[in-house]
Image (cartoon, rainbow, N blue to C red):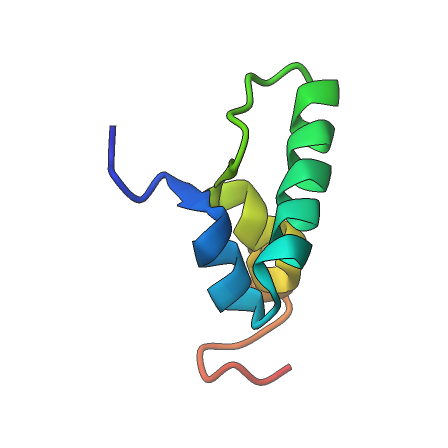
Length: 71
Protein backbone atom coordinates (compact mmCIF):
# COMPACT_ATOMS: atom_id res chain seq x y z
CA UNK A 1 0.00 0.00 0.00
CA UNK A 2 1.20 3.49 -0.79
CA UNK A 3 2.59 5.41 2.18
CA UNK A 4 0.49 8.50 1.38
CA UNK A 5 -2.86 6.68 1.22
CA UNK A 6 -3.74 8.02 4.66
CA UNK A 7 -3.28 11.41 6.25
CA UNK A 8 -2.35 11.82 9.91
CA UNK A 9 -3.87 14.50 12.13
CA UNK A 10 -0.73 16.61 11.66
CA UNK A 11 -1.22 16.49 7.87
CA UNK A 12 -4.86 17.54 8.20
CA UNK A 13 -3.92 20.42 10.51
CA UNK A 14 -1.28 21.61 8.07
CA UNK A 15 -3.56 21.28 5.02
CA UNK A 16 -6.43 23.20 6.65
CA UNK A 17 -4.15 25.59 8.58
CA UNK A 18 -5.89 24.76 11.86
CA UNK A 19 -4.80 23.57 15.30
CA UNK A 20 -4.12 19.90 15.98
CA UNK A 21 -7.09 19.72 18.34
CA UNK A 22 -9.43 20.96 15.62
CA UNK A 23 -7.84 18.57 13.11
CA UNK A 24 -8.65 15.70 15.50
CA UNK A 25 -12.31 16.78 15.41
CA UNK A 26 -12.26 16.82 11.61
CA UNK A 27 -10.65 13.38 11.43
CA UNK A 28 -13.15 11.94 13.95
CA UNK A 29 -16.09 13.38 11.97
CA UNK A 30 -14.84 12.07 8.64
CA UNK A 31 -14.03 8.66 10.12
CA UNK A 32 -17.55 8.50 11.60
CA UNK A 33 -18.98 9.16 8.14
CA UNK A 34 -16.82 6.41 6.65
CA UNK A 35 -17.76 4.00 9.44
CA UNK A 36 -21.47 4.69 8.80
CA UNK A 37 -20.85 3.74 5.16
CA UNK A 38 -19.36 0.42 6.29
CA UNK A 39 -15.66 1.22 5.90
CA UNK A 40 -12.96 0.25 8.37
CA UNK A 41 -11.32 3.31 9.93
CA UNK A 42 -8.11 3.94 11.85
CA UNK A 43 -8.12 6.42 14.74
CA UNK A 44 -6.00 9.48 14.04
CA UNK A 45 -5.83 8.83 10.29
CA UNK A 46 -8.14 9.55 7.38
CA UNK A 47 -8.21 8.36 3.81
CA UNK A 48 -6.43 11.02 1.76
CA UNK A 49 -8.86 10.55 -1.13
CA UNK A 50 -11.92 10.96 1.11
CA UNK A 51 -10.42 13.97 2.87
CA UNK A 52 -9.69 15.73 -0.41
CA UNK A 53 -13.22 15.05 -1.69
CA UNK A 54 -14.78 16.44 1.48
CA UNK A 55 -12.76 19.66 1.45
CA UNK A 56 -13.72 20.66 -2.10
CA UNK A 57 -10.78 19.11 -3.95
CA UNK A 58 -12.86 16.19 -5.23
CA UNK A 59 -14.29 15.35 -8.62
CA UNK A 60 -17.39 17.50 -8.16
CA UNK A 61 -15.26 20.64 -7.90
CA UNK A 62 -13.01 19.69 -10.82
CA UNK A 63 -15.84 18.89 -13.23
CA UNK A 64 -16.98 22.51 -13.39
CA UNK A 65 -13.54 23.92 -14.15
CA UNK A 66 -11.55 24.10 -17.35
CA UNK A 67 -7.85 23.27 -17.58
CA UNK A 68 -6.81 26.70 -16.31
CA UNK A 69 -8.89 26.34 -13.13
CA UNK A 70 -11.51 28.84 -14.30
CA UNK A 71 -15.22 28.20 -14.20
